[in-house]
Image (spheres, rainbow, N blue to C red):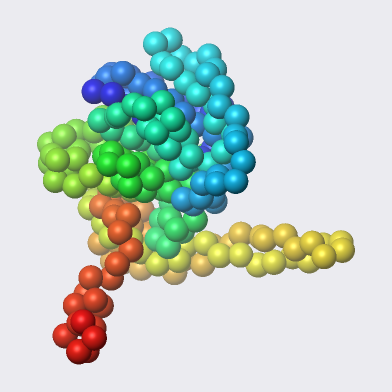
Length: 242
């Protein structure tokens, strides 16, 4: 199996190294990760200027590239720039969970959306801030769950969140808002966004937010398509324009 690994915390992030060490058991691993942290860059790409890509020393047997751009560009470079194909793209392990509508901003998740656009199967993995060491013991159970239920043959795109002290695995849907911002005015015309949690605790374990906050690993099937198929069908049935 040929595996591409990226992240949005940067090529020096401990979560990236941990994911690479876990993945090398399953095949040939290539790393293409941002030179510096790119959190919150979503599915952004560079259109107007060249960016630096350097092959850098990494773990033994792993080819690694430092890419001075976004996670999505890391995937684009590895597939389009190198002219390579991969059986699986992994993104993470992110330092901070990507839940609910926050995935719209996530560079970790943006990378797997780009992989999907380019025809690759992909999984984003995240854990609580500072929770990497607590998440790692659950990797064997997570891999077994994917393999036992044949998830990557049944669907090609997943977002996974591993809370500290995880007590099981649940298939979930995307929940609602988790973080928002206040804006602090500084000197001159500067404003600084100050993150705050806006999550309201619920008991609906079919939602990634409630499942993760209740101590479950959440696995959410994703799609890069943005068409609301139910709305399209309703509009078509109600209007002669369709």
